[in-house]
Length: 144
Image 1 (tube, rainbow, N blue to C red):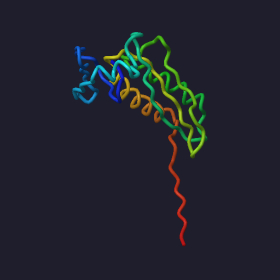
Image 2 (image 1 turned 45 degrees about the vertical axis):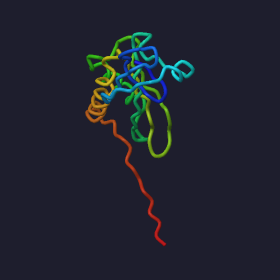
Image 3 (image 1 turned 45 degrees about the horizontal axis):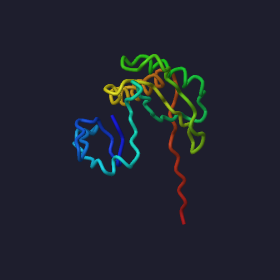
């Protein structure tokens, strides 16, 4: 799985003049090898696992340590989340009426999308069951 020339996908064929990849939305992208050879290529599969980068937010009055503990336990329930490296939860930002957390499980390349979508649901359900609330949007209306 690579990212190059603004495209991300699994390499299907590497020819003399172009490289063919299959994107996540099941499209075939044909990348010319000239620009490919002089541009940046990110190889997502050379190390055998991928970190799935998710962001989820909690209300600012929630206890971060509890949200982290519940999220990590939820991630470990997903059958395709790897034990090593250990799933992580870090604070990305505090502000805008919320605490934004980086939710970071690891998985294999073929299981990336299952983990990407499955972990979000598991964490949300676990937070609901354990009283960890999400942010509530606020709007200020100014009348003239």
